[in-house]
Length: 447
Picture 1 (cartoon, rainbow, N blue to C red):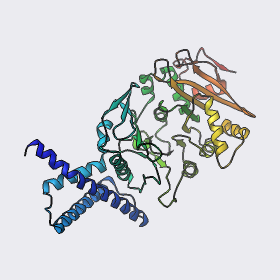
Picture 2 (cartoon, rainbow, N blue to C red):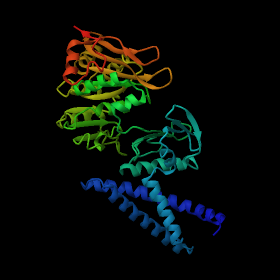
Picture 3 (tube, one colour):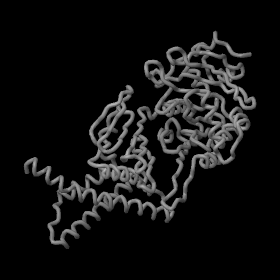
Picture 4 (cartoon, rainbow, N blue to C red):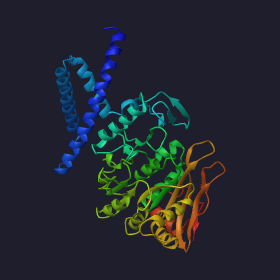
């Protein structure tokens, strides 16, 4: 068969393949609901592939019966095999996004409609690239298919629920919107360093070896740390690097809006981890579980440390309570433009929480819970760097008192500023800080 006939044949298979895929996705979600209602655990990857294979075969058989009933010829075995493979690829891969996800130099994928696709590479440059779907309708179906293939939960993506947030099989985070935008849009944030270490931060230029030694000692000394910074500046990567300094003997509870940290996947470094993810309401509007509730649950699970992937709202209060009641060594991230701005964001979230804490009460809570704030920014060359480190000292009414141990220098990179308090420096020495290597021998400390 020549190439023209092959292309024509494949084109004729597109419609039945899309029909089979849609039916399988719908049946898969219903099947997952039935298992949950029966009290059965989620299927393993192997079981899930077997289930999808069975459903695909059944739908192909149904198409064949319909074709025979209409008196039209049934498709050949080879065509059925191609359709089955296309459906399996769509359900267990990332469809047409796969080629972009396979490129390790890409950090962000932004789709402003099926044919308006932009990628951001590791060097910070944006580039336009080829379409990821034939139409916006097909793009919507791709997003729905990804939602069904990731965890089998029934996740809507339509005008009634016009947004979707999920983790792709490779660990990337996808967020999609429709109806509230002119065209369906999605963004994929990739994590190039799923198992970052402090050495990685030095190699990437985020900090020097002296600061890396200091920050490592903070984690080992069980200081509660909040990592602040803007969007896409590397907060999650830095949190992973900090977590690499946690001894494997400790039990960790991680709490996230969408799974990103992946500490539970490295059983050698962290063998005792429970990863928890917030849950959105089902199509009846029930069953939602937010991060604030998960933090409360996590405290009942005998954690050595509680790690919240990102503070986004009312979970700030249970998080600070966790930090101040014996679970020292906790870590979290937050969006903030400066290290001092972290305190402003914490106060704003606390004021919006059901407890409606006053500024004074929030400052007292934060001062008793948070030991250090580490802030990330960009240096003058456009590189991601740690630009500020603050030690929380106390609260004084409407003011939260802190010492900026490192502050942004002329090039945007952190330089030493205020000495550590003597008691803090001793804690770090007890945790193994090499004061000479970290440059603390001449720097001294407040007495």
